[in-house]
Length: 557
Image (cartoon, rainbow, N blue to C red; front, side, top):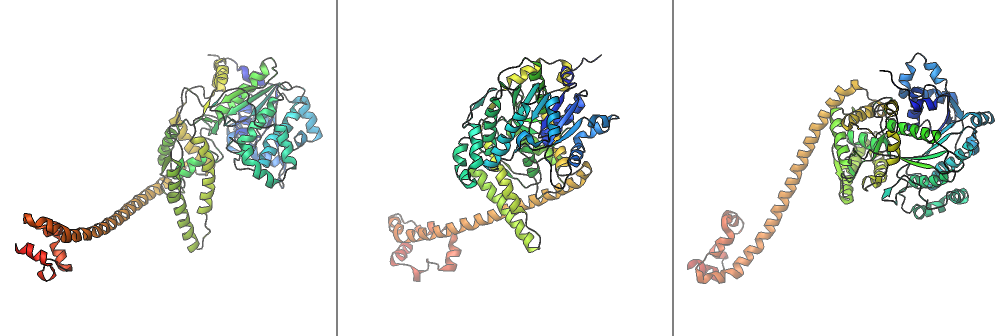
């Protein structure tokens, strides 16, 4: 069978592509995918910020030496392939992105497609920093793109979590809470202390400055809808690669990856999460294919006067809950454990914030202070309390997304995918097709081991031996805690019974004996019962010398 040509790959032939944020997690996969699946592409320009002490060519070499480019490096024409990648020194903070005059002219005359992915994805950044980077940087890229004479498609990468006041998010434009240009002006002159004071009121329903600035940025981008061939894409949580270029590849600890590694090492033992809610995540390779499809769609259609919006979110026909995702992760972490662990992996998600906070105190903070105390005694540097505080900050941010139901409509991208030919559907696959979550989670664990914590497969025998030892230690710890709790319970019950016995004896002797006299009933024996030996050792109030006249009369009768 002769495979039909890829219409998408043919469309990218002879195109010159400009990418911001290329050195990030998604950017690396995007560049690799373009070079591998669109072999006739003319050039790929990467906007890379210079760093002190590092030549820009060294940074590009480091970028191309990452594992995602291994398959391309092994090809006989690898040099020809990598010669298509050009580094453009610049910074989105500056006008025209800070590019030189020569590069400015080059970009103006050649660029056909723009992928704008540069953003500060930290959730704890200050409002000024977030607006300057995410909003101001996008403005500079848009203004630069307006000068591109051959521009056919501009794809802005946003996030599906930027309209948090909506219970259901549709593939349409929403009005931002504030004017983006006025906010840029505001942070340019207002003092940092005043901005920090105003931040909670400005954010309103937004959980953090990242989501807030992404919302503002979308409105700013939409204002260029009649000036540029635009599309806004809203990916949800981006996770490790599903198939390409390496199954399970991931190079950061953001989001679920951090929880996966932290729980696998026994550091995280509780998360605030509703296990019944949907875990809306998309593998990075599926997301990148979706971006390439959207750019092709925008560039191959007649020009519109407004930005199109496309959601890159979970397949509604194959949804996975947080509970199911965590169980799959736990299953494979036990099979493929990490070599360096603080404790045996365990714990569970908590739907109640109160229960979660109690678990944090007992299973995160107390062990952290205990370990750091031992580190101090042995003259080593304490580390766990500081690490746990960072983890708690991360979990507190993430729990906003794991304790709320999210509904993202993604019909537009699904409809576009269904119009593709068989070849394009295979090359530029998305999560619209069925996905084996069990295999995916297995590769996710192996990828996190290899690329995040630098543990190859040959470390598995040692890792499993460590896990086995930690298991026995964990069992011993549980037995000790149970024994301690039973002993404390025994002491408590014994104390209560002893305190409860004295009032009964007093009540029996002084009040009920007279009531029992007509019935010739030995009430003393009722209360003393089988404790005669103990009572005799203490005082033996049955002896006549300690009896009252009434008691003597009763016994005599």
